[in-house]
Length: 349
Image 1 (cartoon, rainbow, N blue to C red):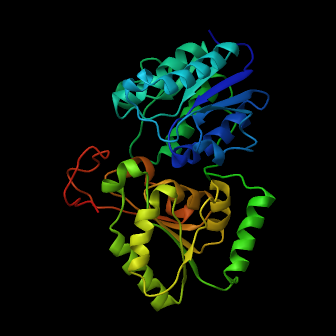
Image 2 (cartoon, rainbow, N blue to C red; image 1 turned 60 degrees about the vertical axis):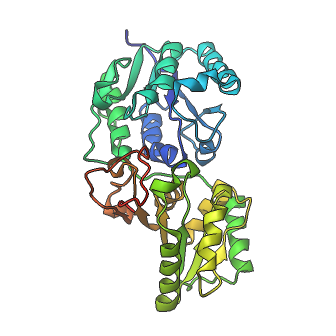
Image 3 (spheres, rainbow, N blue to C red; image 1 turned 180 degrees about the vertical axis):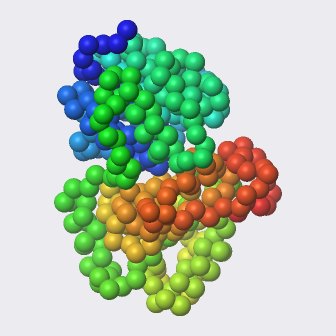
């Protein structure tokens, strides 16, 4: 039964930083269609930072771990179970009119959390991507079109909801992903550049050689090749090179540094996601493995080169050239392997 008025909307997108950045145009479109509704977003601790302060999200419901697995055995972990119980309690407290899942159901395990949250939301409208016809718990099922970026598929979900609710005349056409920065974030970046004597006419190229540590073998281009690339860019173009790395990437960063013929800029340890975004915003070019900072660069409207290995290029790599993005990959019969294959020498990289 269609609710007479849309008051509360529950959106679920658990995953990494890039997964949440990708849905920001859809969140913006959702707020445009239902300006008076409260939008609640269920996401992970780490990823929540990119949408904190966004005018399209009224409340964040935070899951505990930045990179949760999709295994049903998660629920045997008392910490995960406790947090999931909190999220369920929260959804039961609020009467939701619309439930939206922006998860790709590539693997059956990815259904578990969205499925249970859809039940507990009690929403009469349940919408999402119908990947491989696995959206059995949804009543607005959007075909998952692998010929276009996931960003556009999420917008398709919003457009179908608009039609269902008689709001199809409202255009949802803004496709630019976003990260919301404040003055403190930009001041941090400004001080970083002053300290490192970076001036506006410097050619500044950011390079991120790391990735989610669970997927190092199938996501990370070889460190010696990153080093060689840095040396070429510095020598040929007199570029200032900024190397970014999270806490889990420090081993890779050290290996890259050992093979450099010059001293690059290094992102300070403890830099927040939004401070990193403000620093990336100043870059002329950003080169990264298929991971969160790659999507941050796109959101900050920086020309970006993404290097793709065992992940799904059809999900994350089809940003349009109008966004200044180029994705590099090898079209192999074993690709994508979704990081399940342990190759001695990954041909995709």
